[in-house]
Length: 174
Image 1: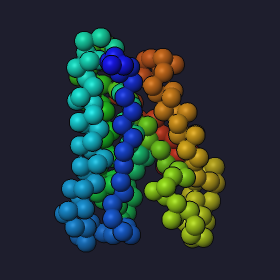
Image 2: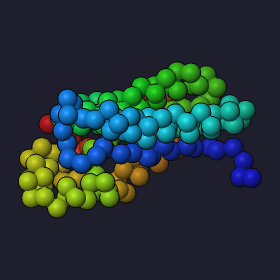
Image 3: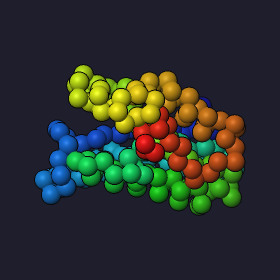
Image 4: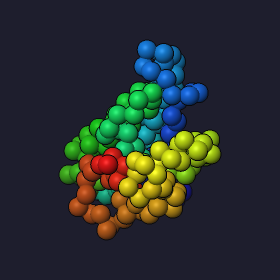
């Protein structure tokens, strides 16, 4: 009814159940659940949108990964591995569909004030950790991530393909 999609943003995500835990204490069911949401979801949505994008000869896919897909985060191996998989899915889409006028890029946020993070933002120890390890000394606001996503979806990034744009206040380089 609305015509083929110009842009698809895959932005579902889960960090896992309960508190962070080492890999050997992570239940296989939690691993599967995180991968179903974080990797299978973007795969299925992209798969559904691609035929229409192919018929039109253009389109943009933005997968929301995480900076944790590029660096390790102890205690969250399902999350970190799933976000690394999203980055690689993005790269594969870029290679497979670039010649058809379809771009795929990933947004890789760092700590961001979201409902998934709300419980952590109340902890004094976490706030101190952010101040000590994020050069900008704070978590991102959702609109800061949204503007980066808009850039990836827009023609302003027309020559980016297969890129993971890190928006983490410098956390991953500190």
